[in-house]
Length: 454
Ligand SMILES: Nc1ncnc2c1ncn2[C@@H]1O[C@H](COP(=O)(O)OP(=O)(O)OP(=O)(O)O)[C@@H](O)[C@H]1O
Picture 1: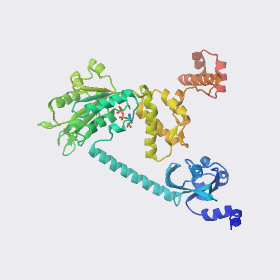
Picture 2: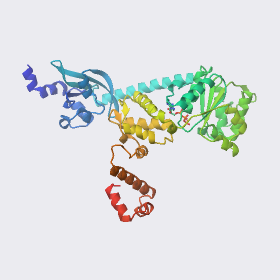
Picture 3: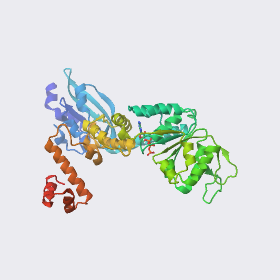
Picture 4: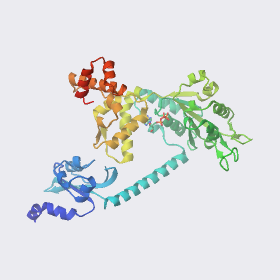
């Protein structure tokens, strides 16, 4: 029997697995592909014969078959991201005489079309779940709490303490910091820690609302207040936030006329919706945020000084990410985990030079930009660790040429290449102008352009 199996191995495998619609792969003890069935090779768009003998990671993205051979532990119903889809994979070690001699992998779906249907059905369910979750959050009003704030920098720890101290009262807080530094996260956290946490948290992005609509957005309007007004009127954000917290993001973009009205609400605790004759009482805590220099705007009469003092009772300044070097690494790890949990793709770390590049970059978009960069890299990588090649050009450029492993010649050449590249871009490819700017002869520039294949 054994002899029969050994002599007819390929034929037997083909008979068992060749015609099933599931994707099947078998690897040997070195993780080399020794069998791939028709369904899998079609799905991967690889030639079956040429895949045989290659390491499985070269043939199947995110494969863990070689790891199963190493650990000898089966992995059942694991999510695997292949060719833009989530797959459900089983990986089973194959044993002979108590030793692992290979592994059998199975990706479950009947055919690609069926899987596509099932996959979109699952995506649909996930989306539905997400929408219920966000409705829950809306009802509850809060997305984030202080626990979501990742930091190891002493400055930010101090800031967290300040938040804990000011949160319980009703005092107005002005959050200042560049875009993407976490102002909204902090506003949510303050609400979450306050006595108002069971009441709504309502956010208004003042920069996103056209000037002529801002008052009706904030204070609402009555039925028939103006032509085109919605039947039955509309409640404004102050009313919606009643009992809770109103977060006015980008307050520096608020038109002067609306600033006067906000000040009145803050002083008198009353709103007057458009078209109404009687003011209504509201009880709202105000948290504001801006990245703009309000003091300068006051001097230029673009922001009202009296409103500034009213909202700036407790100022909280959030430092930009580039000034929080200790946080970059920690945040990168945290965000990678958050993204991979959401996408289901197995990526566990960054190559050391990626951390180095993160550390050197200026991060004008702060934590949001870091999150976006990592998300794109997670989609691009085929490895478990993100490499420098998965980063956008602006970060690669920053990656130091002063690598410990590089010779002086290599460093000088990399610098020369980068300088020429940048200059050529600046002069839209005009080599004559570039040579003049770089104070080198035209022929020397041509030589270098050829050498570096620019
Ligand atoms: N310390 C942190 N820990 C974890 N996540 C953070 C941290 N800071 C910011 N983030 C994340 O970064 C993203 C941007 O944060 P947020 O929206 O709060 O910034 P913002 O300052 O309000 O930006 P903008 O001014 O552009 O509205 C969010 O996804 C947020 O969860």
